[in-house]
Length: 232
Image (cartoon, rainbow, N blue to C red; front, side, top):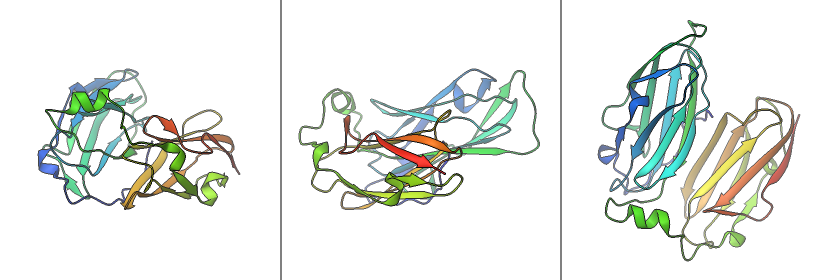
């Protein structure tokens, strides 16, 4: 997935306290998943933006783990890939940008491709992260989440589609958004917290046809999810 890097950091977020580690930050092989972890424990909550820039466009997957977030990408062309990790705005975390040298077969390209994921993180603590990951948010109620916008109904290929989410009375949780097209996932999805439980979501589908848009608050679908979108 690739997204635009417009997002809002939070006051308690500190990029200097974020750590990243894993083989995927320094090396890999074409056709094989490369993985790394971004540890946000004790760094506060804010927008985490990860960009992979290299000879091939990759599907960048993000999964929450106890200490933060695990990212997986599968390069298809050999060469050097830059991995840029920013937190709470435009602040690079220590070590960013990282350079991963990818070996193996595949077509080389003089033109770089970019993929990006932006995650609105939740506060994690090194002492409590395991408990927090294991226990659901007790006050979370996805039925109270409200959504609105044209992007929940239709979109145009290769153009931004937008909708908004209101979680202000739905308890404490994490907003998850995914868009799946007829053949491939939507590569550009941006979730931006604009304050007071209000979110703006922007996605850009690359293929025409029927898409499925999933919006979850924590592990629960919000009303209407999954949405069925027709992309012209």
